Length: 428
Image 1 (tube, rainbow, N blue to C red):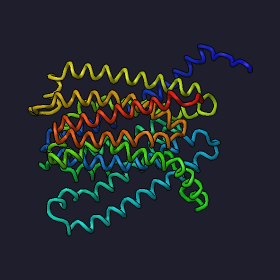
Image 2: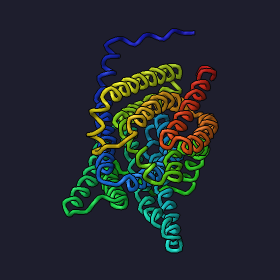
Image 3: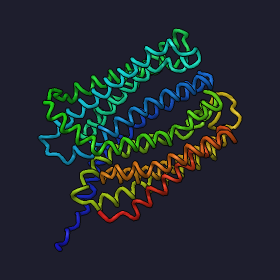
């Protein structure tokens, strides 16, 4: 076998410098979006009752469920497939994926419209809780559209366009809330969802103007791409379902057992680990297209770089958690704005959950890059079952702490299963 010539050090340094700019832009972009979401969460936690904040958290989780479905069926497939296409085929392929996003959004809005027609026949209590559903559907559809244009910009290596998209969305939300506050109107779940929808619509318009895609395609071409995406995406879709059950079921169990205020306190404690969360998607957005390009050319290098990335992120999560808990008494009053008994133990549990989520997400990323969506979905089934059973049982016994202990049990289970699968998998 012929030996491979080593890459000169000056070429490695040049490659790192070229990567540095996009990485900084990606980190800035994610800092903008996740940082603004964090600040919005703090503002709402300080301005709403725990019950209102719990309802907002449940609605936002539904939006993220839909975004996860779209990611599984469309965006993940595009991220791992487009880099391997011939340059001339990339724009038409991306346009067909945009058509898929638009069709999903139309279906979502139709279903939400049908549900809204049934609301007047419901009792007053459930009707009040389900009243935001139409706005949830609209916000979710535009969240996914914004995610598409952001992912497309990264695939084109036009990180500045993705940053501009998100900056416009953030400015619309912040400006809308500022105008409401000046008018003396308290924030509400419906108002925030409407501003999310308006902001993402404005960002999508800007991104489409900056990188237009032709939407006229034959039904045959659309059907072929949709079919290929479905073959891989159906397993990723199952993975989204079980992952959502695993990561969000605590909210609905707490709301059922303790009411929306019970979920609100757990979500308030989650804000303490939110600042770290911007780092993982920022790094993955810049890493996925580059690692996917290595899948056929240098699969072993793709695996080693993915493992190094996972270890680095897990180490940073551990350091962040240690610093947070050491300074908790100083940070808590600034974030919560009021005294909240029992907040410190919940924040400590979220730190443990964060560590295992970051550690297993690196393994999940490697399975996605290898197109092993079916394996990833099947691994999530037992961990989701552990989460649901443990959360339901422990919430009844220990309240919010029990719910988070159940979530932690599921994360540990999934961490073990994913890395066991990767350890015993044949080398690429």
